[in-house]
Each structure stands twice: as C-alpha cells, then as structure tokens.
Image (cartoon, one colour):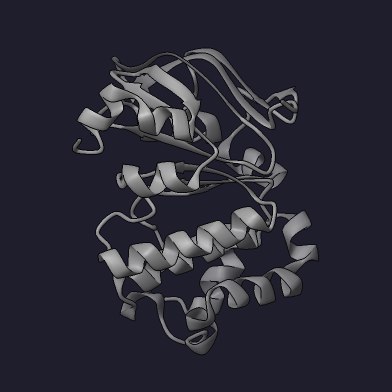
Length: 238
C-alpha cells in the first residue's frame, strides 16, 4: 500500500471537559475513498474536526503528506489542500451560487486555477451552472448540498472530507450525489466520507472504519467490513 496522504495517530479530543475521541488511529490512502461509519454520537464528526483543525487534538498526531500538522489551524490546513465540506452545508444564503463558489477559492493555489475549477464544478453539477446567479438560500436541500461540495472542490483539495453527504435528502438526490462522488473518485480525487447511509457508503468506498464510543472498533476493506456480522446487524439491518 502506498504511503497514506492523511493519518491520525492515537488522537484524543473533545469539547470543554468532555472527551469524545479515545485514541483514534486511521489512514487515508491517495486516490481512494475512505468512509467512516458509526452510530450517532460515535465521534465521527469530531474525528473530522480534529483532522481538519476546527478542534485541536488533546493527544496524538495528525499527519498530512507525511508532515505533522496537528497544531495548524483549519485555515492553514485548507490552504494546503485538506478541505472539509461540513455537516449542515454552511452556505452564504444571501450570496449567489457563483459568489459561494468564489468563497471556496480563497487560497493562492486555488485562485490560480479558479477558471478551470469553476468549469470542473459546473461539469459535475450542471444545475449549478444553470443557476449561477441565483441566491443559495432559494435552493432546495439537494441543490445546497451540490453547492457545498462544489465550494469544497473550488478549494482545489488534495483530500476532500465530506461530513454527512446525504443528511436530510431524498433517496433520488442521494443517488445523484453518490453518482457524482463516484465520478470524483474515478477522476483520482482522494475522499474521506462520513455518511449515515452505510449501504451506499460501503458500496462506493475502498476502505472503511467503524467508530463506536470514540474508538475504531472495526476496520478493513469496505467489502470485508460490509460482510462483518456485527456491521450487518447494527448498520445494514440484516
């Protein structure tokens, strides 16, 4: 296996006095889709926040491209190409599609490729191209999620981290977004995904981690994890 582009080594973290992560270790391989599944409250979002810098690990290390980036801010990590599409989308609702996308291209690296990245986003999401001058707040949930992913792509990510891609979306829109995720993966983008639809996430990803109570309980190729009796019972309804 090639060297991981992103690694967490025995990371402990939480909020205030409350510890959520208890020694999480995981690795994201380049050009792979890695998924993180688990029940509500298992620590999935906290793991992403600790990786991307919106909270600081209390113990352990975060390595990106072989370099220790544990203490870097979220902004600095994003500038290097570690980009989070947050749960709940967090768009600027009074701004147009194009203005929201422009906000994603804040780093010098991304600004240099602005035109190419914009065309790429409109290629993946034609609906955004059609409505480029429309305000984000007038969009449906599915369209807003497309815009949130598009904004992440505008940052020219080396690793795109997506928290709850399908949350609150219809089955049809979920399928459409997963089809786009497959295209991004086939185009060579490295993706880390937290997703409530465990079936779809395991079907699309290469490698999976199952979190429970702030620890990695199970890991392996997505096919192996999908066949695990505990996973089948707890998450796949079998």
